[in-house]
Amino acid sequence: MMQGHWDGEATALGLRQAELLGERMKDTPLDAIYVSDLSRAIHTAEALQKHHPLPLRIDPRLREINMGPWEGRFFGDLKHDAPGEVKRFLQREDGWKEAGAEGYAEVTARAWPAIEEILRDNEGKSVAVVSHGVTIRCLLAKMLGIRPGDPDSLPLGGNTAISCLRCENGDFIPEYIGDCEHLKVLNIPVWEQTPDLRAEAIDPMQEAAYYTACYEDAWRAAHGTTRGFSPEGYLLAAAEHHKADPGAVLRILAEDEPAGLIDMDPGRGEKEGYGWLSLIYLRPEFRNQGMGIQLLGRVIMHYRALGRRSLRLYAAEDNRAAMAFYRHWGFEKIAAEQGSFGRVWVLEKKIGGAGYV
Image 1 (tube, rainbow, N blue to C red):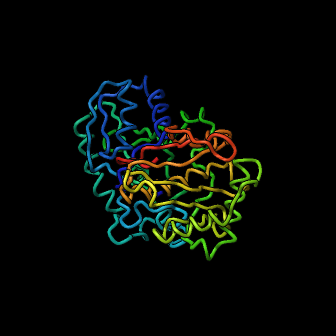
Image 2 (image 1 turned 135 degrees about the horizontal axis):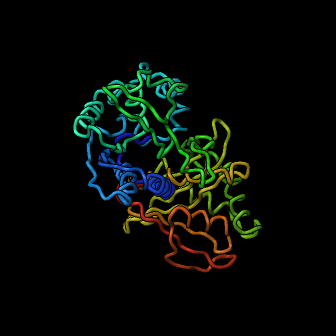
Image 3 (image 1 turned 90 degrees about the vertical axis):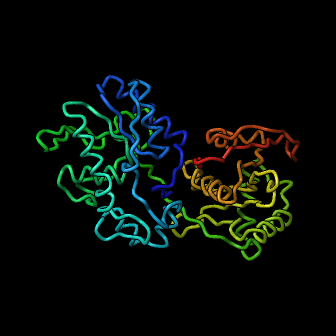
């Protein structure tokens, strides 16, 4: 998801990455820590602070690029709706500028004076500057005298990537750029190689065959059988969800191939302040590839926009894959009920505050 100035908290994975960064940097001498004022950067800086008891010098000029109308939108949707603009954003900084957003040159003009002040105030010292992907890219480009949008000369760094440079007489000498060696223990790519999924709202009655097929397969995966599955009841319930909120039922696509389904019940929990997830589903060929969080992220963002403070759902106790997935993403058991095939749990995740996963 595009974040920009949107102040989302770090995910559980992001916090682990920051912890590993802190461990790597614990023996590196530091005299000062400067950091963007956005929460995810502060979380990262605090991992350094654990081993270096220094005050965090917070500077909003080190913020990420302001993405304007793209903030809070998912990459898969943007790549479908504006593929040329996404490519220009990633590779041609001089050709991308959405109304209300910053361009790369504006980011550089904003952030570079902060670097100049840091240099003046810390001559002969070692400092850490914690910022964000595009802002770091812009700053490194100016330091090295290269074009910031060139993906070959200066690719975007992964989360917690370290770039180390020495400044001598106004010249910057790089020791290494965008290093993520400390993340190898996670055994995941620096950049996840999963497709950016997109979504389209559907009327479940008009897409009854697709909706029913998805729900039937989800039922089979959860219970090992389709016994007890009542397509008419679930379809009628989905129609009510769609009637209450046209964005409640979503078909998920990998490029143009149908990949899954989301069904939210916006009326349930409205007075109590929680959102209810009736179904989150991926077709078998798209499972176990790290894509599930993209669906869950959409649900959380949808309910956050409605002012809900938490998200709830049912999960069958014997559906080990589902229980493991939801536990991993911070859901907790709050109640148990008796279902058709044994006990089902009501799971809940808090979604209030700035973060979304």
